[in-house]
Length: 377
Ligand SMILES: *Cc1c(COP(=O)(O)O)cnc(C)c1O
Image (cartoon, rainbow, N blue to C red; front, top):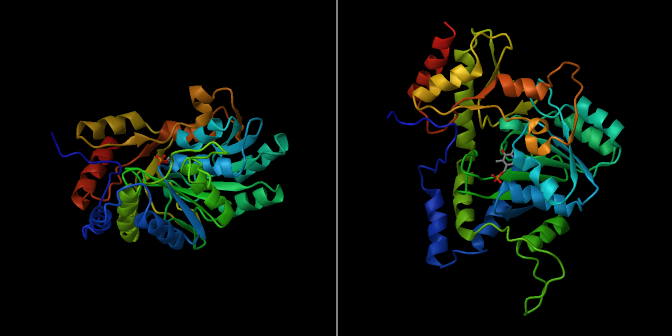
């Protein structure tokens, strides 16, 4: 069996920074739960992205859930959510018994279409929150989206799980709204083996989230509870890995960018292939390189994925939009597309995520490229 080439997999630093922080935790027997690494990881991440406060949590999903709690999202509330995303973006809306309304993508960034968002406000004037996703590390049209949210006085939550380190007009994704969330799951640009972070400039809310995330224990010697809590805190070990990984985030972004640029160059003469665009004013982290095939392309996404799979190379379709998921079939979906298929559906049906692993060598990427190019001959 050939060596597997991954979409994206954990990549510890050559300098072994992660081991140093984890060892410190071991040496002091401070394995769990909280401790120096957790506090420092919060500080260091907040500083990196330019947020005032951060809460380290057990997963990105937990961070989105805590954002919903912090915004007092509850039964009867409507939350606007990017449709083209991973289910973890929307599940926390359901955990709080609120109702998601999905917003279609636009073609320039593949993210939430501001015009469709505006249209959603016509139908539902008072949503409790908007959750926008920066897909595969490419920033959404955030100026427009922030402006619309401000006009309607609705808080914005950025699901920046995939876009840590991406910037829009020089500002980090995750810092434009009331809350931003990041994920350190194993496949993300940096990992803690599993974990997440909630950032905000609102110190009181972040402290409240830390309280909820440690079982909502009131200040008392005995175990006293006035609220429902969660076991959502990041462990001191995971935070140690995170601190080490944060040191190589910029290297990872550089590598991911080189991978994207090589694909772009290699496919530029194939008219049917269109890479996920780099929108104006943005510097994406290029977590995953993805392209969309022309609808009339004679080569279909499945043929490409099958050909790669035969050589033990991982690739994936673009996320299946939430409005097409059986579990969300009763939810409303807002699009400005008059055609039979929404923008998100077309991206799903014709899109592919390419191997974007930072451990992939240039030679290995050439193999991937050649397999794909062969199909278009
Ligand atoms: C990975 C991911 C999440 C969830 O993060 P976890 O840390 O795995 O819980 C949420 N949203 C998007 C868009 C993601 O890609």
